[in-house]
Image 1 (tube, rainbow, N blue to C red):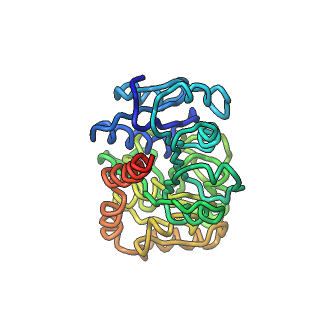
Image 2: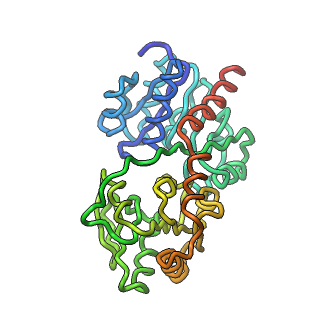
Length: 316
């Protein structure tokens, strides 16, 4: 790998929102003339996607493996950008400027790990406030960049009310299940990977046709109990679908007054919000689409992130 201005580090093998954003960021940086690359496990989908795009890559073990620190030490990148918690830990001992990207809205333990980075880049003000609460002051908010999905004909199996996201505990699908029990005549489905059972809700599995599911749906619901930002919500806004989401993390920032926001962990409120949206009692979807285009563009995300990197590189 040739000398780099910035080496991004992602220790995960899954393909979720953070990995999609890293792909958009690094390919945008390369187009803008940055010398940049990515250290990630060869066994993950991110490696395959970036390899096909011609991104310089460094193979590292998945997870919290100390061999990653040794491999990063051997690289000659000027600045390291950590995109996972394990990457943050493993980059810490290296004498390089470090920027940490943080996407989650739970309170960290703090300590040396959070004093070490030169800067944090957070996906919402909600996440930034949590990071500031444990000490760091050089904290920046850069919203995810989300593009409208290409339109597709409606999916034959598309539900009336659609949730998009991995079936993991913080996504609140158990709350959605409890809300579904209050709405026995409403067809609700979840598109996303995972093994968790969600009674009363159709499980559509991992999908690469979310635009087709959007075309079949009347409402998108996002029942998270924790959420840094919520790319699926922005995609729904761009598709001009009414959104019902909880007040978790950055979701209220994303929607503003263009969606229905209900308290998290409240099945009755979630069910009521879904019924309101189905009845047409929701803010104008055109206003939501305008908000999404103006606030969450990919080019804006790349430019804002690079401003943070330039500031640190200039100071180093």
